[in-house]
Image (cartoon, rainbow, N blue to C red; front, side, top):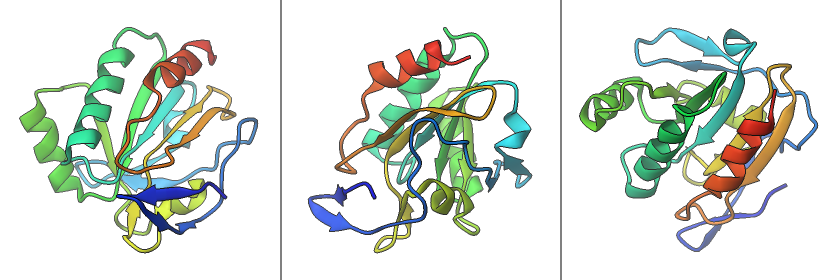
Length: 166
């Protein structure tokens, strides 16, 4: 299992670690309008899944903005930002951010995504910062579990992986 700290303290990740080459696990999360969204509902696209502890914090805000800016330059790539923030808080953040192509999804209900991808921080009931690229055939082509929750992911490597995925 990936080793992760949050503000310098070790945390226990719950769930199944995902590796490059794995079939991406399906999951059910909630959109801002409370409708259910699954990995299957985005089938046929490359998915860059950006996982953040809470969208309303500095690094999470910057991560969400950066991936969504980059995604506008990519064909057939959907950026999904997933956190355990309530859908209402995510919608409020999206409105305040001025970003209209951001897809924020909430895993607050049952941590289905977090457990399927091994990013639930047990001690905090938040998701650990991570990035996954899933190709249009549901194969995981890139994985980064960010080792310290307050650090940024490797944006360049993730964007390059999304460009290379088909």
